[in-house]
Every structure is written in structure tokens, then in C-alpha cells.
Length: 349
Image (cartoon, rainbow, N blue to C red; front, side, top):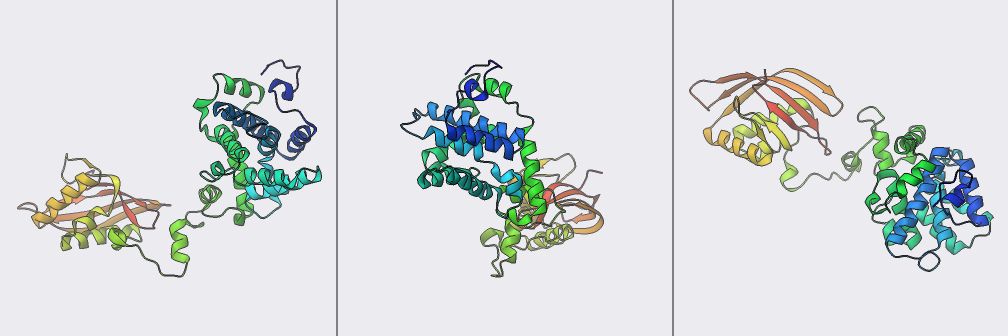
């Protein structure tokens, strides 16, 4: 690589220089924003570096021209043409790229490999099992977006590439383009994809389903099994109700189920417990003592999937006199829809 500013990007980065790669470079530059185009070129350079690191030889172990084409065209789904289509952006991009390559007389076998590389470039664990070009493209793209395997790049390579093709806050700009598409056309963002996860964070709470919402809406009536089959608190208010029921029934595991694995619990003033094992032991002691608890709601403040709850609490059975307290509790809605404690401090006030 050379850093002579008077040389073209092809010469400075030693890109494969053919009529197809030149056409590809120009087409992607016209179709996508500059920061996306630069990302696509960097992805190729990183993919090539990963190939070298694996001992793979261009022209022998993989098709270098095809790898370049797949990397440089992989985000065409974020172009205006891709935005006007109705599929997830990876598939839109693959279809646009296939049409571009077909117009230039590229063989269908090579087009199929490029299509896979583009359509699967966000598919961890799948792209790596496909053709070498597909796996390398996905690896290079992941390096440039998320820094995956960046430590295996040759020393100084990333700095040189970024000096020529600055990042321009790529990851956030890329995410903004994804969200713009998904908000306009939610059907392009399946709830089970990372695009769906991005969209969910930009809509009112509960407006876009998560995995457990999809299960509940399936119509088959499937319910949690095993230990998780206990009733779940469907609202923050129900956590206290279940707490009193489980304590009266002596159900230690039921009580533990009302806490996240790393929850904080204060069973007595000055005693601060963290985690399932410590909380389980505290609950076992409460049950063995014959403790009973009465909770009267004071205040609940809910914001999306987090709630601040305060109860007037009367705990009996643990001493000669009832223990009166005002609880401070932070609850969080879990993926299955149930509410549990993150922090439970009856003595915070």
C-alpha cells in the first residue's frame, strides 16, 4: 500500500484493477452515500487481509475479483433503489447486485456466489460455511463494522486505510439508514433480525413484538415449562402479590423467581446481598422462620420496561415485633413479559 495522494484509490490500496471492478466501484459510489461506499471498500481490504492471514491465495484459493465485487456492492440495499423495495436490506442489495452483474455478462455461477455473500453478510455462523468468497466478505465487513478480528489485521493496516477512507462514524450512520428504512417500511425489519431489534428501540414501548410476544401471538397456546412454569407477574403491581403468596406457601424457588440473576436484595438493614445464591439462602431463612409479609402499594412509576415501586411493608414472624418499612424496588420486564426485581431494598428510605 502507498499513501501518495496523487495516486488513485485503486493504486493506493492495490485493489484488483479490472473493467468489472472499476465499473463496480463507480456504480456503488453513485448508488450509496460516500461513508457507506468507503466502508464497503475497507471491508474488501480487511477481507483480503483475513485471507492472507489464513494462508489463502488470490486466484488459487478464492476469486479476488469476485470478493471485491461482493464487498463493494454489499450495502446496495441501503441505496434509493433498495429503500423502494420491500425485502430486508441484505436481500434487496443482493438482488440489485445480481442484476448489475448480469448486465455485464458475469457468469451465473459467480453471480450466485456474490448474491450469497451480500444476502448473508449479517448472518453469523451461516456465511462462514458457504463459499470462501462469502466467508471472507462477511469477515471483512464484520471487522469494519464491529471490530471483529481486528486484532488479526497486519499492524498499521487499519490506520493506513482509515487515513485514506475515514470512518465518518460509520456504525451509527449505517444504523440510522437502517432505521430510516425500517420506520418507513416495518415489513423490511423482521422482529427476529438485528434490524428488528434496532427498530424496536426506536418505537414506543411494546409497539414492536419481541420473540416471546411472537410466541404468545402464535395461537398454539404454548406455555413456559419446568421451573419457569410458575405464574409470572404480568404487571409491576403483581410482583408484590406473588411475593406474599410465595412466602405464605413456603415456596423458596417461587420467591427467587421474582429476582434477576444478579439482583440486589437487602433483607435487613446493613445487609446487602447480590445474586441468586445469596437471595435463595435469605428466602430459605425467611420461610423457615415462618415469616409473613403484607405489602400495600404506595407509588409506581413505570417507564417502558423499567418500574420504580414503593410499598408500605409489614414483616412478621422474624422477631418479637413486626418490622415496618417503606420499600424501594426497581423492577424490569423480562423477555418473556414477566416483571422481576433488579433492586429490592425495604430499608432504603
